[in-house]
Amino acid sequence: MDFGFGSGDEAFRAEAREWLEGHLVGDFAELAGRGGPGSEHEGAQERRAWERELGAGGWIGLGWDGAEGAYGNRTASLTRQVVWAEEYARARAPGRVGHIGENLLAPTLLAYGDEVQRRRFLPAIARGEELWCQGYSEPDAGSDLAGLRTVAVRDGAGYRVSGQKIWTSLAGEADWCFVLARTDPAGRRHRGLSFLLVPMDQPGRIEVRPIRQMSGTAEFNEVFFDGAAAGHVVGGEGAGWRVAMGLLARERGVSTLVQQIGFAAELAEVVGEAVRCGALRDPVLRDQLVGQWAELKVMRWNALRTLGAAGDAGAPSVAKLLWGGWHQRLGELAMRVRGAAAALGPADWTAQAPYELDALQRLFLFTRADTLYGGSDEIQRNIIAERVLGLPRVERI
Image 1 (tube, rainbow, N blue to C red):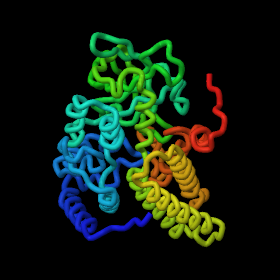
Image 2: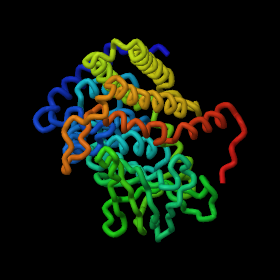
Image 3: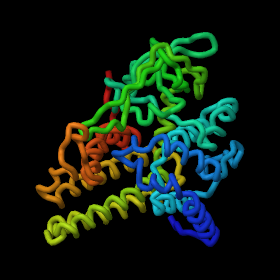
Image 4: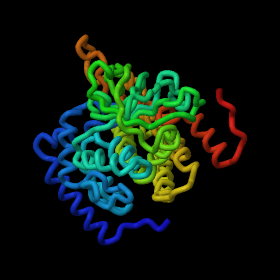
């Protein structure tokens, strides 16, 4: 693919850079670098205000194919979406609390929703006013999503949802949750599932419990539904698996390139640490750092190669296998360059703050999950084997 930036793209870059410099000031300046992997809980309410600032500036919904500004957003070409992502990362702007609504739900509604649903939800996302979380994984149905047990029963024109979801990011801040639930009790595995939109403000019907991790933080939550009302089903009853898989396939392309910009910053921090502590003199560690750099370049070119491509059933799984393993190895390497000092926290232990960690230690702990969440490596290899290579399907009970 001949990928390059034209003069119009560079003018767009100048506009994006000027806007970010003019708005990442005051209270927003204090959010710089906050809200990334391992610190999604930090400054959530302040970042919500930043989301509204982005919406007012017209920077939400740039990649909504086919929307063409119809829902209060403005659209941009793929190259300009990449430009915006690069400038956003360069400015160390805060991690987005609205990315689930903008990058996952909105494209799904454009592909599978009806116009009533689009008119109701997309403008609020574009303004940065409503936040979303994702209700997929369950305690006994993480990587094996088709084994979920959450049910939804008809209640007039809507549904009542009961069950439990887990590892739900931003559930405590979200206004809405898109939930995959079983609406046909006779359906087996992926049959009989529906994709429902559930408002989170339902006292007594929805309970959110933060999951405290070994790092002392609570990046994720458990969500319990007890007859929670849902008035919207996307794609029709029983089409939940098709809609859910379509949503997951959208976690690539520009979003993958955005992710890699963050990876590059993390790699630079690890290299800087290796220089500071003298680990760069070790030829084995030096070779491993160079290997990480080269693999990141390969991932970037693979993402550019598949940018905007459709119909490649294996591309999302290949991308997940590549970045999941790469990021996990980076976390391990971050500890290796420090040697024994990696076991020491940045501050003395206290009962009030027993889990003080620095950025590289948080990186290491966070990346242990990279090969599990979003579909484990085993699941991704099964998808490639069955849907791309045409190997016999594994019978699942």
